[in-house]
Length: 169
Length: 169
Image (cartoon, rainbow over all chains, first blue to last red; front, top):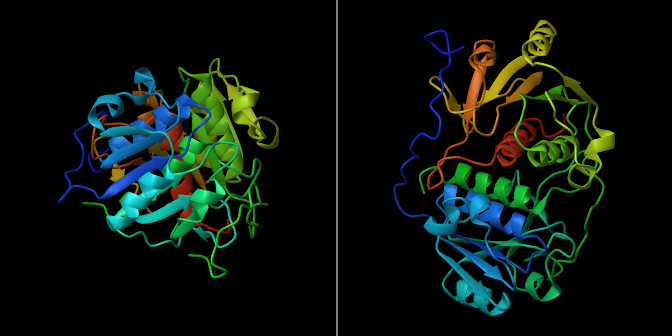
């Protein structure tokens, strides 16, 4: 119970200030669903990510992405590997979100501040070409059925965990 | 990089076993969107929640809820307060997900094992009647625009945090 004996709405209160801009990029392979892409944009913008990288025919639905469609720097590319190569050269650690051999639990993964979170396709996941470029792969533990999370939800959970580790940027 | 020098897909691998069933219930006030309700059902089922409580006209969309539509015990009620009163009597701590006076960051909230996560409406949040019944309110820090997360995504993040604190149930 709150100290004053009750809870009162304070909806959409201003965000937590960051001590410095995040060095967190979200990069998506071509996705099946622009709903998922747009939900990822909303969360990425809400957590103060630096940039969203989309590939293929991805297009934001403004009603779902909300301010993420305007506030979050966005670039759309034909394919992801050249972009990942540049990020790697710029010192970003490339962290895939996937169930693979060698993937580690998101519970125990210590993120580096300069991270590119690489998100796979809803059905196909990350391509072998992309997997070969990654530094780490993280997975979110699953306990029941289905044995997977929706792509936008998994991405949002990973972004939450990153922010939990870097609560002020 | 994985020890063998590469990452290979292991998609939809079986879930992590729980040492005991979770005592985690998700309870939603009447929601605007059955898409959100169905996404909540998918995540709640994937994390092995005990039960999903819906109210009003909520109806699962099977394609979105996936196995959550079958595997997760579900009940639909006219209103939430009587259900919350029974949960409280059964020893569940009632934890709202909302931005309120007295709400604490999800980063620092220590969940009790026996928890009912109470989810508010997308626009209206939790009613005053429900707020008055809660033991705690947790909020997920926001850093950029928009100043809020989608309801299904916020719920999924809170479920992740609970599971992180109780990784084996």
